[in-house]
Figure (cartoon, rainbow, N blue to C red):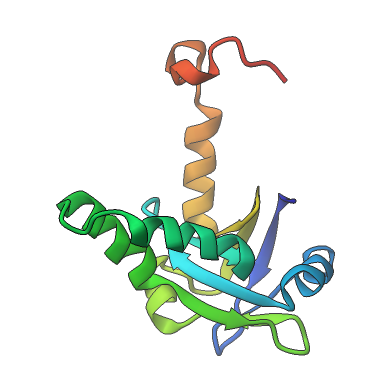
Length: 148
């Protein structure tokens, strides 16, 4: 279970050092084999490979005759890239995915349960501001009555 937000830096080659608290779990659960893909919100999703495979299979079993399903398949599976943590616990984010998510140097790694989101720091701050701006009338119906 991945949770928490941490500011990190991409190095000049586009490598991201996974924080130690997550690195050990990723090595134990998937031998550091991960999948990066694009997300419609403008960030990247990073899944341990065993978490990604059932998602990919479900997507690819859907009918490609439906244009919306085919677009989703193209988007998620078409952007998916297998990456492996190196001995220093780093993953290489390809130039294509870095360009999609506008990742330069400062990035945010956000734990989301079974996966991570990888955001440009400025984009994350803007997204964060939107979330903080929720008022009682702005909550989705599914959150009615939800308390922390």
